[in-house]
Image (cartoon, rainbow over the protein chains, first blue to last red):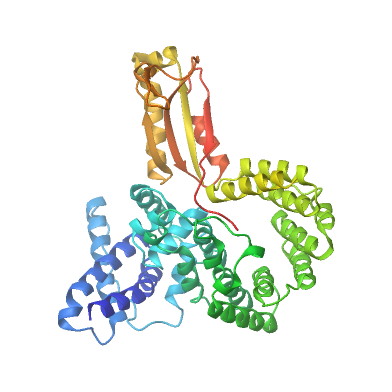
Length: 382
Length: 115
């Protein structure tokens, strides 16, 4: 019973918050009110039974709390203003999806990207501040302040400029996907959370493509690190460890997305990930074609870098290196790819130098270990 | 992205900061610190005691007095910030009151990996 109530409350929370925020605008007051309503429900429902309309019950209780908060705030500020009698919002879920409204607000462009992710996890994902702080490896007080400032920033904001929710969920996924190591088991998994939230988005070709991309990428996670916790590159991963169910779902989704409408960057990346997940020989010709398309519709140095890797598989390492000659991409990735291609071309000295350069530039401990290992390997086999 | 902001000082700058004329500088630091706390960017911070109280421990457990290097400047304190970009970390460092000694801004290695 208690578990069921908890699940129900977690499911209802973003809708209730969305309904209150749409009505009252004051994001911070509304969020506090929802917390109080959830607490009241958690205390009352297990004993008295779940009400007929749990969503309506929570909205009504939350609404009263907002009114109380506004009233006491006004009373303490100045007594000149008489509180207009506010009608409670309709108890039934209205035609607009409140969860989506809330998602749009949490991803508001006035907030910094890390704040957008944190607030989305808190308000829509229903995670505690401690859980979010743990996921980002910062102290709870730091995260509490970040969320508190984000809430204040949203006070009275209109909904006419909803943020790029897909992009925020994409960043959330990557944050989780790249955060391996540490006391991983004790941490909330941001990738799983991002997938759960992406499933809530209305299915356009691009949001479907994004979901497919996440599933296909996440499917490879069990094979990404070996028993010692070291990174294993895609080509050396044990495919038997890939999650077949996620690959099947992701592949079906990307096929549906591409068939249904205008092509976009998420669909293209998902299509590439799907080709990588296919059994047997990798179809590099198709992958190169997709990267060329991606580099045309959403050009970026990282896409060019990936295109060079694919091209090298198709036409040899020097074709890839040619493409990289004028690429301007700070950080470790460019020298790491260059090192790999020099190694494949048999130029071990250049490979070693580039592996060492990449190792000195990375900000990731597992990557550093991997790159040092490759550098040592090229030296020993020279 | 997390950065370590390393504050360097020497006996003269220490004397200034912890003396009477240091009060406005301290106030400036407090203001920046309060701002970083409020924005949720401050992860940790500390000021270090005088270099004279440093002990050096070498392999084999040999302990000696004094800092490792005979340098003019010593590591005097730090801030760890979690910020959106390197530009933001540099901006914080630029605003930090400095008497004569510079500050170092250095990224932290993380456990994550992109592969």
